[in-house]
Amino acid sequence: MTPGSCLCGSVRYEIDASGGDLGHCHCRMCQKFHGAPFGTYLEVARPAFRWVSGREWLSGYRSSTNVTRSFCSRCGTPLLFEKDGNDTLDVIAATLDEKPEARVTYEIWTSSRADWLHTGDSLQSHSTEPET
Image (tube, rainbow, N blue to C red):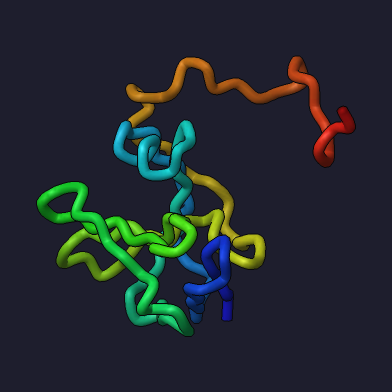
């Protein structure tokens, strides 16, 4: 079992398997939904996913005619991306309580990649919050 939860801990879920593909989406909707340059998703078979607690705090936003994005209505944490009729759903990887076994294997909507996104050796780096 792989557990996951929102920031405030009100909404909790479990995944029976380690999941499938792990990837980044750079589309503008994902950027807005996550408040970040991209969203990272873990594909999970629907039967392998279950809500453990806090389903009453779950809200959904219909971002497209066939897509619902779910989030915790208490703390705002994005949790799921679901396409109607799919046998899988996409869990927001950052909400997993343990590191996923999968590694990122794809990126989509790179045409919308934030041009200010840069990571690497040339940046000042701190393992924790720096002292002021």
